[in-house]
Amino acid sequence: MIDPKRARLPLIRQCTLLQLNRSGVYYRPVPQNEANLALMRLIDAQFLETPYYGSRQMTWHLRRLGHEVCRKRVRRLMAIMGLRAIYQKPRTSVPHPEHRKYPYLLRDLVIDRPNQVWCSDITYIPMKRGFLYLVAIMDWFTRKVLSWRLSNTMDAEFCIEALQDALTRYGAPEIFNTDQGSQFTTPRFTGLLEERLIRISMDGRGRWLDNVFIERLWRSLKYECVYLHAFETGSELRVGLTKWITHYNGQRPHTALAGRTPDEAYHDAPTSSGPGLTPDQRASSSAVRMAA
Image 1 (cartoon, rainbow, N blue to C red):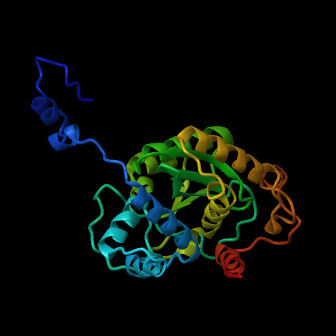
Image 2: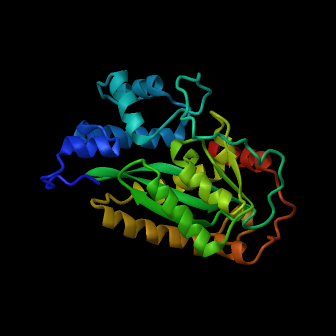
Image 3: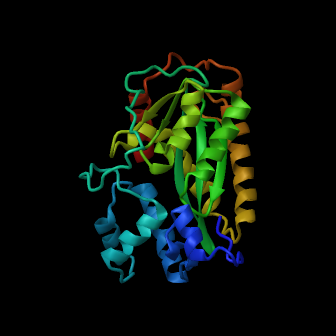
């Protein structure tokens, strides 16, 4: 929106008209150094195992591994990665007045068919020289990944693009569930759902079980793809994720789907695995398998 070559309209005036901070125009992001990237890779791997670790416990963990780090540095890196411990935290900030928080609608709801409930989440993806963020939209019942996008920032644009792609390709679900992240509470995102009369559900604060199936997806994706390949560029990462997600959807059988793949279950529901389970029941069984 800013044109620095426009002689008749100085930058100061352009920023005033657009209600932008002038410092943001001149700012150029500084990439993380190699030491920070190595720490972020360790933090990410440990967070998959212990999502209840906050900055204090994560600092102790890194020190046990031989890294002399302070809690302030760990807190800053976790903030960059978008990682938040699952325990209940006090309300330390006031949400944007336009960002409405929606109630959680899945408790005691029997989910037994495709397109009944979709869910979405964002995760941090480490690379050899940097990192990106990944958002995915998943069908809750079949575990099928309907759409995904990569971004180098945590803004809402790539989430909106993924949502639009999923809606175009697969129609509309009855309920859409997310956490309370600003990318999902912005009216630009929720407005797309409300236009299609999709009911919006949001996880309770600190309740990781509310969206456990997509958390399991992140765990599988990272251990089976991201951590095995030191992707150097975004294009390499995109190719690798495309290959893994295609395999996940079309060739990888799931116990919860009676041995069928997500694609098979999505296009040929219901499964033969018996009656549907409520989210709490299925989440509890998944949590037991994760702990095992």
